[in-house]
Length: 130
Image 1 (cartoon, rainbow, N blue to C red):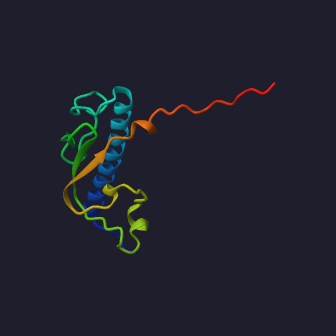
Image 2: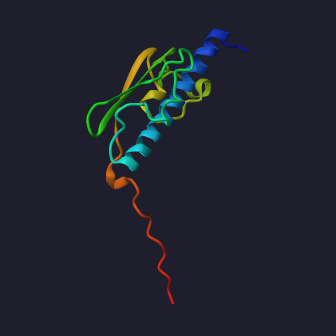
């Protein structure tokens, strides 16, 4: 059985948490946009303050670029290459977001708020037939 070092396993766990945090932050930013019709100006809102780097305990970086785009940044420990054979078996990364696969070091991701037409569209209710 081949196993990585405890240090490698710890780095991988930190990176997994960072990826999960970025996912949750994106969903909460989308929810904020849906409710406020604007991107958050910063991460001071209580719903965002719990997101901190698991290793440094510092908040992730967020920057509102304009009315429709923002940037999320995190510093990751390990490079995860989607073209590396067996990557899914070793790292359990199944997502399509760009942050699932990354180089080591500080990484920033430019994201776009959801389109207004895709938020809160009512679902047609069935029409009763007499």
